[in-house]
Image (tube, rainbow, N blue to C red):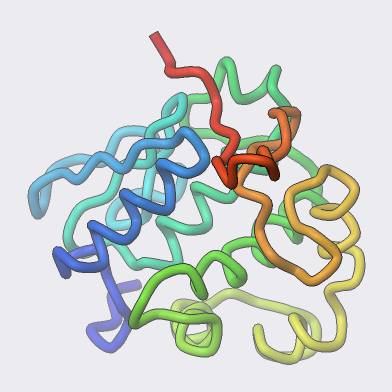
Length: 184
């Protein structure tokens, strides 16, 4: 599906914000040229791809897709992360956690925010049993939120902890973010 009203990774300011956000998790945004194949894309272009700690996008990749795939890397256990190429795997609860986290991460990107991201998710065709993303987020996502809290990915106030599942928590004394070791 290609909807021109959906925010994409084509805006250099949004790319810069994604680079900064992903770096807080030890992830890397890899921007490919228009029409280039996207390594690690499960659904096919223009959907983002994941390989190791890299999130692959091109200018027509929706922001929601980049955040979703980054959310997979953040939410998966270290064993799956170590062998990651294309298929994030995981169960339904983890998938819900990924959707919830991508919405929270949208607030970290100037000019995006959760409301815009949820509208884009609906326009792209995400499907939730309450009919739309915002209703799911408000009324039906307690299990997703619980998953993220149980794995120390968000705090009690729904703020991202900027550490991947299984990584050390953010260091409160320095205010630094905990990140993963670089992939060699």
